[in-house]
Amino acid sequence: MSDETCIDFNDGTISLNAFGGEPPYNYFLNGLTVSSTVTNLEPGNYAYLVVDNFGCEYTNTVNINAVDPITLDVTQQNINCDNPNGQIEIVSNNINGY
Image (cartoon, rainbow, N blue to C red; front, side, top):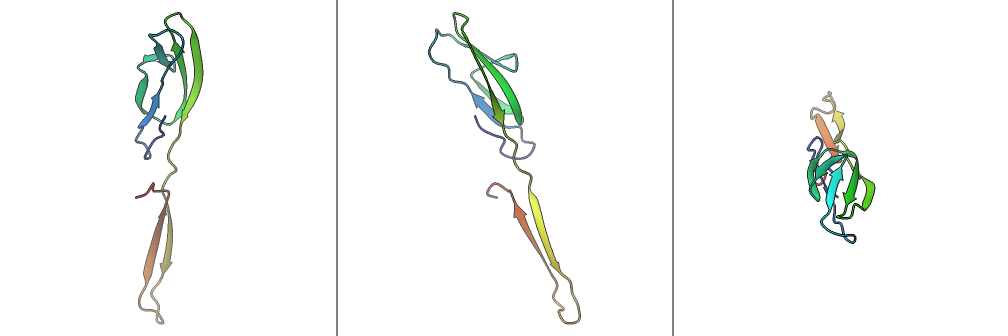
């Protein structure tokens, strides 16, 4: 499972690796038939079901997390008679290494 990498990218991934039971396996995500790896998922909760060749079922849920939004802290120093050099400082937060 991998979470969304950037706001509104909807690029989460769920990989299901079934073992035991009797292959082949059928995979379902939120009631839809899927392959064992599902990509381009938006953040949210997903219910999955794996069914083996004998009809034995395993079900569970997984959550794709959203990225925290970028926030900015802005500090400004205005120009005045004692200080003719104003300045603005902008510090960004939650930018995933950028």
